[in-house]
Amino acid sequence: MAQHTPTARICRACDGFVAVAITTGTRLPDGSRATLRITCPTCKGTGRNVPTPVVRAGR
Image 1: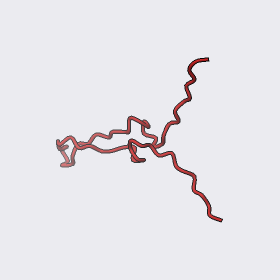
Image 2 (image 1 turned 60 degrees about the vertical axis):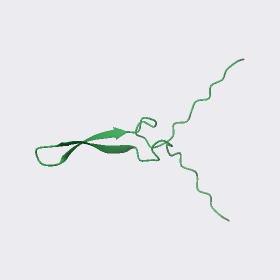
Image 3 (image 1 turned 30 degrees about the vertical axis):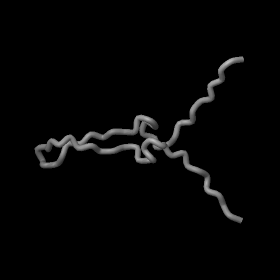
Image 4 (image 1 turned 90 degrees about the horizontal axis):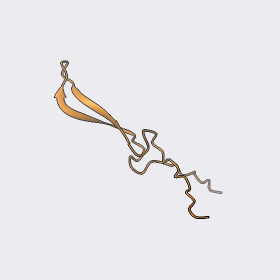
């Protein structure tokens, strides 16, 4: 019998790659580039989907 793998709740915005390094174009005194580390604003750096809370409207 085949085993089913549970589906991972990976963030749709970053596809699991939660941080990127963006170069600013300037160089540091040692010759390396200055970079900024930016995390995914959707999952806030976790790499997983945050379950949406159920909102009940009406009675």
